[in-house]
Length: 464
Image (cartoon, rainbow, N blue to C red; front, side, top):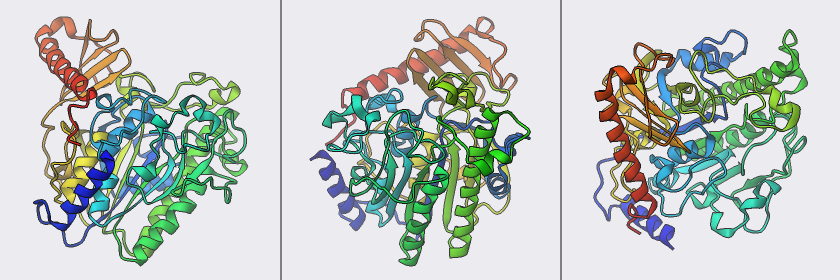
């Protein structure tokens, strides 16, 4: 009922019953591509010399490269929630992977765009709620309660090819430790075209969606959340062969990334063929840092987790930079005319307000506070520093980073480490004892933010 009220208000908002700012005449398309557990150092444009990512590297050559971009969390589900809402998932109970679900009171970016005449599609991993009240994957066996039901099609997406969580990256219906299925927007299991590379299988659904939208001259929003290179990571024989000089574990990890890279190239080529590349904003990122070998268990498959965080400290699950800093590109030929790089500090929570800013949309229906900040000015080349710090919370870890410093706690804020990220980006030297005043100031900001999240948990942010 609350979701229906919100949707009614959005439709009313879009037809002028509520005040709004003037919209752009030509609404750009938005595509957000996200890899799963892809490390900061797993792509060529960030210095990797072993993994072949020519398509992503070509995208980088024509993009804005956000060199200091953060996932909202060091694991997948919370980061995904931040993209949809612009808010940190500590506010609405998605604290970790397989914890919580997208609440109906949250106003997703897909719902906002629907009110503006967009058609939206979700393709790949969802991990923000169960996908069926009747048909349950074994991976959802502990999540079967209807209260956790929150598939993409009840969160604003018109077309779906969605899995609850991870899939094998080759022949996804095989080699599974837990049974997984793909569902469409009618809540039916998809059974055709499921052999071979999983990234290609996903893109086979994306391309017709884009073609149809372009043919109807209707603006679209595509959320492409690849499973690669999350475990169980498996590369097809032709991709393994590309890396035969390496051991088997690297053959699979590297090969799966190259297979995904090909599909990103296929996507960009299709945008050009359709003549819509100039009016399409294409984002690329990862949901967190690389997983550690054996961290996930699952026998020999876990040994294939060969990701790199570059020189950054930490990996997936950590609030050190290696668990949070992820690759980030923005390609928009109409605005970004040539390759640019920026050290502007941004995060996955910023996508939501950035899209609203591009469309000149103002709405009072979005739950407040919003943690993200638009980086449209950065896209336009108007350099500046971020107006406020970015806060992180994951289990017992807490962190806060501003344009220079970062505090980190592993014991729920009892003690803090301090790093000067401009001088020490790899967090090798804790300077907390030398600068207690910085720790005091930043920890106060962090505590206030955490208290704000606790108020949000009570439902205080919702108007409906």
